[in-house]
Image (cartoon, rainbow, N blue to C red; front, side, top):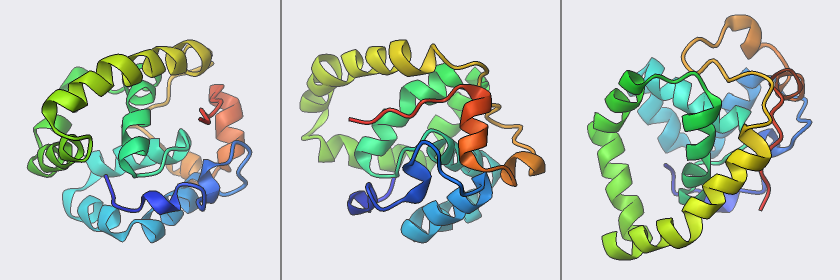
Length: 165
């Protein structure tokens, strides 16, 4: 999760028919959020896989982007419970989650926001976007060929229609 929420509308990979390749989209994400790039370089494949989901599903690394990515990752990818558990147990992820709760106004307000706002939004994103996917995104098995493929083509292949608020 980055502090670059101002980049939300500046990233080309967030456009449905983006002509950037998946790799170019990842490069753009990292250029706009160098702290994300640094953590991923240090942490390795699991973090890069997560960053690729930001790109393919068109979500930036702001707090809102991280929150909106959740239903996509949970229901629109092949991520396993073990991968989720390992990712969530990482100290950097725990720290970022704690910072996110603080940004939402604390644990109580965060839970209230989740129940009143984000849970219905997750249901909407699932019903209108994720459920309609042709294939689940291969969370931890993205190939070199996929990295060289334009995002618009990948999104058509997987039936990904980006959520726009």
